Length: 331
Image 1 (cartoon, rainbow, N blue to C red):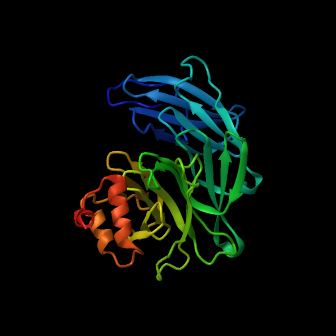
Image 2 (spheres, helix red, strand yellow; image 1 turned 180 degrees about the horizontal axis):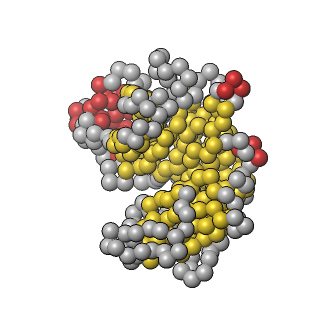
Image 3 (cartoon, rainbow, N blue to C red; image 1 turned 30 degrees about the horizontal axis):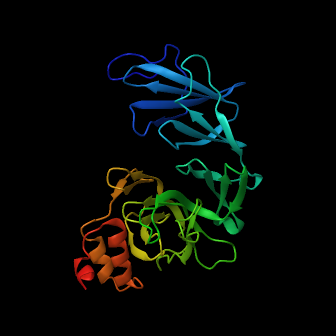
């Protein structure tokens, strides 16, 4: 039974809860529990009103869930992926989640780590890890086109969707899938940034790939989390050993790398107020990572490790309206 600080009860008959998730913008909590013979019961509660707003029953056991929009909760079952649409759900009786696609059989042995849908609702990805040969951690990703009802399997460890300009057409936001990948034949992990929507007018589809240079003292390290910052045109990456990377999205240039924790980070979200990233590690520490807008361009212009740093600082300053490139513009 769930009690609020106001003293009222949300459920007369308590349901054993195995997992709960807070809404990302509202004072709402969603709980789930397995019910023998039914599947998984998902109940949504408005904590301000002290009432259950809707209930869903999924016929599968759920191994992972996450918000994909303010109104859609994604459920990853053993066989399929579902969406619960809170906006269209009735507050009477039981609603049925909508099946989005079936999980590829190649991902049956994976522990699901992340799932997301792009903002226009045309693409989804599902990422999982598994123990490969020699007990080495391997990854698989099912990238799925909802328009074509087709998917493909890739060796992707972390990814994110984003929208930002990556060409000189600064008024156009490219719809991008960013991901960290390593095939069995690759010596290094690679960062890919590619268009999954229409390219900017008069421009080819944007696709870049660059090596991810792991630290020398981090043998066996691999990417686990990724977020994008459209405000600054950069991509954030976290690894198992707690290293943070920041890449520029249009070229893949490594801007910054630093170890920020010695505990594995396991979850992250984009910080909408700063366009930064918030992550939590296994020790329960919360890290808030943000771009220093006043010094980003100055840092890039002076960084000798960044190829063509002068041109890149100029491009980013003009593309995103960032300060720090006054001397460059004057020249």
